[in-house]
Image (spheres, rainbow, N blue to C red):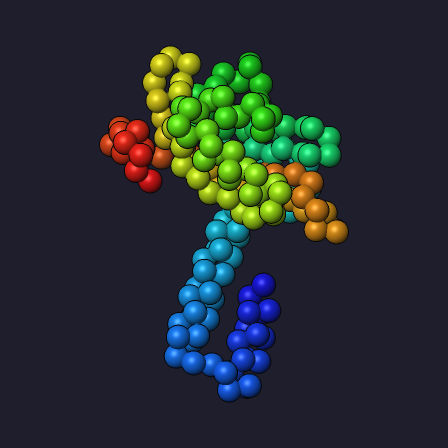
Length: 179
């Protein structure tokens, strides 16, 4: 995409149509694309590129990875995802349809919109939401996800990284509707 933006910018510049306001728009677009590229690279570095259906691998740390195959209905979560979400490993991973059940009701539409944007529109997703633990505690979790596409550009899977974030202050801010 960055190459397409650069080419379109050069074309507009060569045609003499580049006004002051348009320069700012082009700069903002390039900054957004560069930021997106950095985020995608961080996400991709956590998964084996040549084996999207392989179990997720991550170095030790406060992250967990998950993979949902739309072709096989296979779901795999690292043990860290279970820990981040406060779900016992013995209960197994949740499907994408079941995942919102862990969230507080107010945050369920946020997760649903992020997953839909990833699977239907093929966009990377990032959202922060609150999860109810089995012991009644509440935790704040960040999910960063990207679609896995086939050779034709169709989404065949979604992979995600989960991280527990913030403390009680962050969770209270979310409860009041802050982001």
